[in-house]
Image (tube, rainbow, N blue to C red; front, side, top):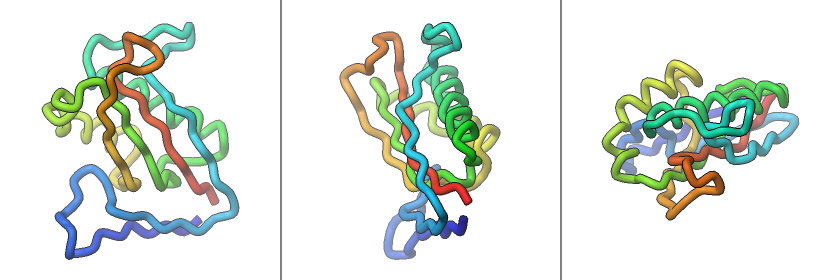
Amino acid sequence: MTTERVNPPELSPPTGFSHAVTATGSRLVFLAGQTALDTDGKIVGATLPLQFERALANLLTALRAAGGEPADLVRVTVYTTDVDGYRAHAPELGRIWRRLAGREYPAMAVIGVVRLWDTQAMVELDGVAVPA
């Protein structure tokens, strides 16, 4: 797969995302929304950063099972019940992202929601990847 992160100078500099990503590859992987569920189906983590870390790890587990790697992510949407909390923890969330997924960011959006399917969940991530 070939990807290119596109961040035009006419837009504000991106922090923790890319404005656009082009991808050329042989297939698409659509990743279902992942929350901080453990293997028993229980939400773990009492804080937004802990839940983000588990949700991202779950997303990457699904991606790897489908034959992809974090660098193959071209789009990730983050849904959170606490946008203010997400913004307040952004530096920590960025460190978690870099530790688990690397320094390349896909095109991303953060969407505030009233609640998620699992009522204890504070964050959910879904995505699209283009593995080689």
